[in-house]
Every structure is written in structure tokens, then in C-alpha cells.
Amino acid sequence: MGRIMAKRKSDIILKSVNDLKDEIDYKDFEYKEYFNLLCELVPNNSLEKLEINAIDEKNMKNEGLVYVFVIQGKIFKIGHSITPITKRVQSYNCGKVEYRKNGTCSTTNYFVLQSLLKINKIVQVYAFFPEQPTYTLFGKTYQDSFSTSKRAENVILENFIKNHNKKPIGCTQT
Image (cartoon, rainbow, N blue to C red):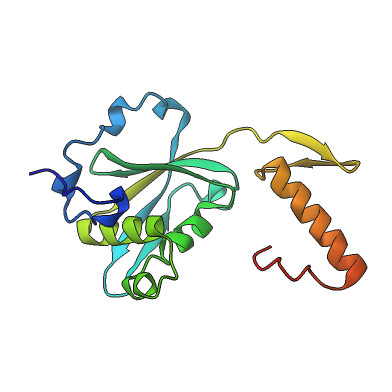
């Protein structure tokens, strides 16, 4: 039996590892030679969260990665983060049922967390850290995982706050 059709793919939570039977095997992943096992995620249903078991300690704090979540050899998700994997997993851990009912978490975080808790298997996280570009903004050179527009926004806002002691009223997230 296939997945029930929904408005969005993320509306239907996966229930078991059997829901991954038609997914691609990690061994067949074309880019696997560039990825290394970074950590494992252990579902903790009683706390409604994923716990992290670090494997490649030296890279756990590195920013700017592409990651692959693998469950029993099947690719569950490919994603990226400008932050370290620990912060990305913290974000997934916001996908709690209560937060979804309140409309305070993203559909992606809800789908990922709730599916991984229901499947209830260890998730292997493979990571690739692409070379970070060097770029210059306003006479200063940066090398990081930010997009240049995000970096420029941050530089401008930091200086705005320094010069005016406050953010513009509409800047609620930065």
C-alpha cells in the first residue's frame, strides 16, 4: 500500500521503516564518496526528540554542510545547513506535536521529527563540507557558509545597531 495522497508530502507522517522500502539505497547514492559518517540520531520518544551520538567529533561544530539521513541503508532526507549539524537537529527537534497544533513549527521540522520518532530506528547522518567561498563586502573579506546576501544583511544590520542603538522596527528575526 502506498502513501495516502495529501496536499503536501509533509502532511503524512511515516509510520515504520517499511515506508522507506521504495527509497534509494545509500550504497547507490552517486555522491557517497564525498560524504563521511558524522553522527547518529537516536529517537527518544519519551522526550519527543532526536539525540545526537557524535562519531566524527572534529567536524561536529563545522558550519556549511550537506547532509544525508540514512535509515537501515535507505536515504530518508538530503539537506543542507549553514549551521553545524547540532543546530540543525535542534531545529528538527522543534517539530513537536504541541508546537504543530499551535502553528509554531515548520511543516518540514514536524514531518522529519515525527516520522523519525515513529520509525524509531537509528539515523546515520553522512556529511559533506563543501569548500567555503571567499568574498569581499564593504572592504572586508569573509569565508563562511553564509550566502553573500545574508552576510551583507548581517553586516549592514550590525553597523545599523552600532550606529543607532536599535534595529529597524520591522526586523524581527535578524
